[in-house]
Length: 255
Length: 329
Image (tube, rainbow over all chains, first blue to last red; front, side, top):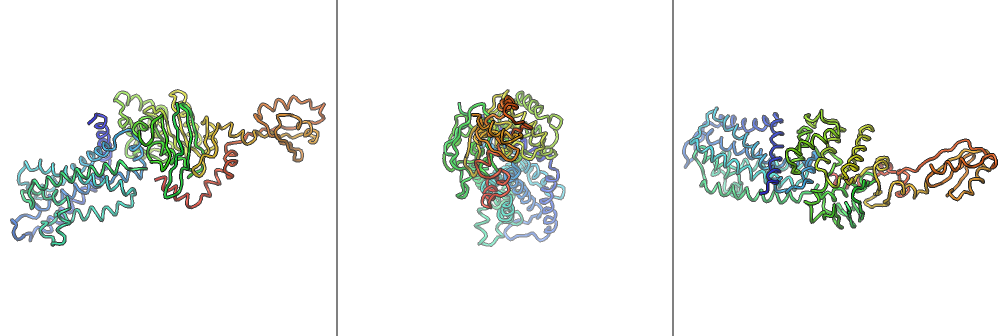
């Protein structure tokens, strides 16, 4: 890749970092939600988590990877969809009129979004250690970060793609209700995917976050419902597809 | 060489023609104005030339580069100051400029030098490290203009550069634009619906209405089309004066209304001395007062569209308003 494109990626990343570090309320706000989920479900359902055909386990241990997946999902989608904000506040014009490859702009946004999402997900991971979460194998953290990055790439790409098609801020609510929440609720973040009835299974199985959460569980607590390699391959394909789709649609964007 | 060349440039939104078969040429080094009311198609034209919108029909070249086939080259040659704010207000003024400079691939040293230079130019050095969200409208405007100049574009588009600014700031910005044009040889294309702005800055003006260029010439020639200047003379006795004045070949039209005589002439300021040379005693009348009125671009706009620009702004049809909304987004 030419150094000019790297410069574009860097400047997009730098901008995101500056904005992130200044928006303290945003950081607190986005961490608070997963953290409350963690506390309420983690403690509320401590008892009575025993599934046929599965090893007995502490629900908190089961839940934490799901919440980390959720943190990555929310922050990544927001990072992708922030194209809508840039459009609304006019800054998108400044970006689009510049003599740079649109693909590099999308990659820059992904780099920035992943960094901020990772920071928050890792903060959640650290917080969960204080309330009793046990990592089965410390080396698994590296693998877990890989999974977080893959989740990030895919959903930021999806966010950019959606923002490029929808073009208005009002559509953000729709995306939130119709895509982000179902993706999260059906991913097995809260319960094993085997608990869902048959008619929901296809949706669960095409939900990319299912494999993200499963992969995170495999890396952090050594429990998974799919083979680790399957999780990796599916997320990799999802990521590549979404980056291609997002770049393609973003490239066609007009003001 | 031509800075801008368009042929039958057309843009439709849902079947409505926002820009209708515009063909124009702008020379290198020129300050060219597109004058027209809101919704006339000025911004849409600029956006097409800046590669932000694809035309429905027709073609255009900027610095010899095709706006569809050579987008990167076009983008490399232009700077643009948008009508609506296009700043990141969560960054400081300096950071906005730095972002821009990096995006345009300036190296560290050039970057620092240019930022300092343009900040000085728009007198924002002291506010450089303040978040843009805390800037006033005028300061934001100046920052945007500074940003548009940073990479020394060959062609600078200014979309309503002084819209909503106070007169003092407006004049400062006009002077910056003239300075840039003269010192850096930057071609400037500006849109405006302020008559005095077009008059003050532009070497040539295209009057645009409902997406069409209805007149295109130097401001002076446009005004001359109206039949030149009007000299109003108060004289006694008026009839004698009327008879004495009507014989001059440079008087294009003469009319009398009580004590007042109106003369239509070209270059009125050169005709006043001629009036003074008349031997009033011999002709038997006395001139009490002389008043010269030059037509404004406002008169020109009225002449070509049948409406004043303010009437047009106020009374646009609903259809156009909706279209405008779409165009702005």
